[in-house]
Length: 168
Image (cartoon, rainbow, N blue to C red; front, side, top):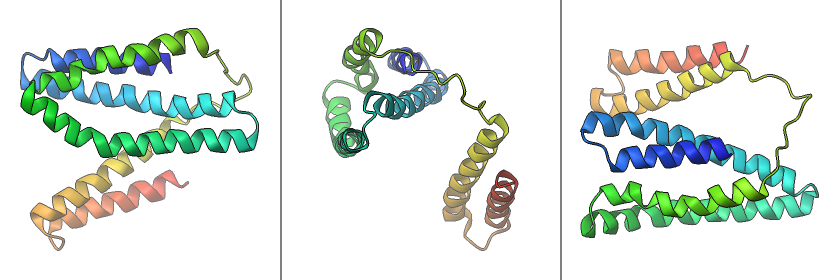
């Protein structure tokens, strides 16, 4: 969780200080990876911190509600910030905001590694990522090329192939 937070904070800083569009476009995926690591780790921390099912369910509900509110509020707030202060501040404001979870994670969250856990399925993860990316590419590309185009058909076939391969 801490690693995801630090990656998110450093990538936010890189985005906010980006000297070129290429630099910004390179830092944004790193920020997304940090966020993904953070969010998935947060669910694991909730599971560890609330061993009783009823409490854990409530904690996950609060987490889900918070994520839903953030997803709803963030775009208009981001628009106001970028309009009044500048687009860079959308990223730079993450720095002070993230210091609270970095500090509390550092001081409050204990390691809970499961020694008996199975290894990460790297091939399965790569196939899932490929499947998801090809689905998004197919949906976006079909809008531009048309659903009956050869490109859209090939993209949809890539989805099916990656889904079949990943299910084995």
